Amino acid sequence: MRLILILEHVTITCNQLITHVVAPMRGKENPQSDLFSQSVFDSLLPPDHFVRRLRELLDWKALAGELRDCYRGKGRPSVPPEVMLRIMVAQYVFDLSDRKVEQQMTMNIAIKFFVGLELDACGVDHSTISRFRGRVGAERFARLFNRIVAAARDAGIIADRLHAIDARAVKANAATWRRRDDSDDDDGSGGFVKFDPSPPGNPDPDAAWGRKNKHNSFLGYKHHMSVDAESGMITSSVVTPGNEHDGVVMAAVLDDAAGAVVADKAYDLPRNHVLLERKKIENRIIRKRGGNGNRNSGRYVVERTNAIVKRWCGGGRARYWGLEKVGIQMLLASIAANLKRWLSLTVPALCPTG
Image (cartoon, rainbow, N blue to C red; front, side):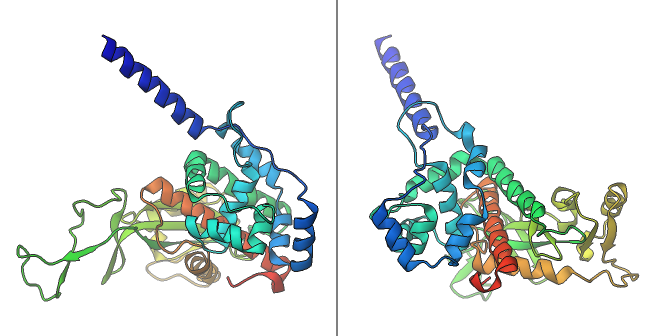
């Protein structure tokens, strides 16, 4: 009985500790930096610098309001959520890992200013960044993404006359080849053999084998997106396992605000034509058998945006394991691509590559 009581006490204590770690008290951001830091930032970062424009683009305090239920009313104050959100944005705008963004917050004046740290402050620890991302979760990041899209609409950036829908492959953060052993038959592939469709010991069970074409397969996920054809802004982002058919996901990725939708032949399914007709959205899906006309117009925009997300915004390969975490990664990559595109449309010379 005494042992049971001790174990119950330890369990309660551990649960309290976990609760404290998962839900700290919300910290408050100091709106003014010290005079020395401010003078250095003013001398090194001109008024039209990219990070200054990026910080002024959004109401970070209002965005942080979406995260109020992630914090408790008492305890040790956390890093302010406004700061953590800007860290998330900086991480994907500049395509940095958790450890790299921690390092850059310490050494890079521009990123230090954008995040909101004093000149002599060290970067926020990478483990804090990881815990924050997990505490916020996919649903809240989706709400943040939607708020930024709504702000772009209010600013007249997104026209919604034509949306282009497409998907791209995202390779999983897992090996797909292993060294040959004596039990393997000689198939002429040298010293390595490909894993079975469900590789034993695969650290990412949510990833699945998919195909880019008849001769090129991949283990991972698909990132489906809807892009406004005039602005190039992403209006919807959905992640599925790699074996999901593109056309089946159209209902999830479709933005009801679109006046017309263009997509490739993979979306030429009866259910999608019925869906667009029911929602009174002009149907420009490319048909598998003739009758295309000018339906292909505007599809290049989603191809270009896919390339930007993949190459410049941290959306190329899965950084994490699991559908939810990869979904968060693609939401953050989409937010970064949208903010860079927004700035490039308003002040083209300021936007970095992508």
